[in-house]
Length: 207
Image 1 (cartoon, rainbow, N blue to C red):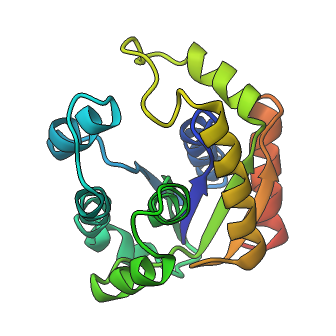
Image 2: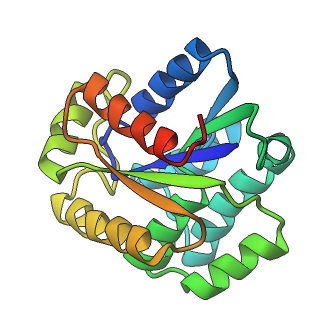
């Protein structure tokens, strides 16, 4: 199964990816994980400087950069699709690109972005789980994270953008945009949020 955890910046999706991996391994399940955007040399050279405002990219460049990130890992993802015996857990994915590039930044229409996904054979997740976290809670968590000495990026520094993103993600869940969605309360402590996620997987009889 290919499962995506998504949320606004600072919500804790990366931590929950790791916690879910640990939980599934205690169930003797085969599980791996991946983070999107993938923090390789491509990200460090092109995407990260743009997020920090050090360089500029036009609308097409933003969209193509995040699509390339997904196509590069499509072959890794495909063997997990629909397989109940093994799991690939991702935090962030094309779900994030839809929320940011289509709805928030209006750089490309959702219809066109979804058509790109099909044309470029980007695998559709078996399930996406949205962690619903208050923007103020997410900002506080982000400030406590390691590895952010250079400060927040162009999205993280705006509480208004984060509020808008929260609304966007909730609507994506409601409308089941792109793939199957579930929403989990992400405002509690780490263990509580993990329990909310595993309850969803149990409820869907995925584990």
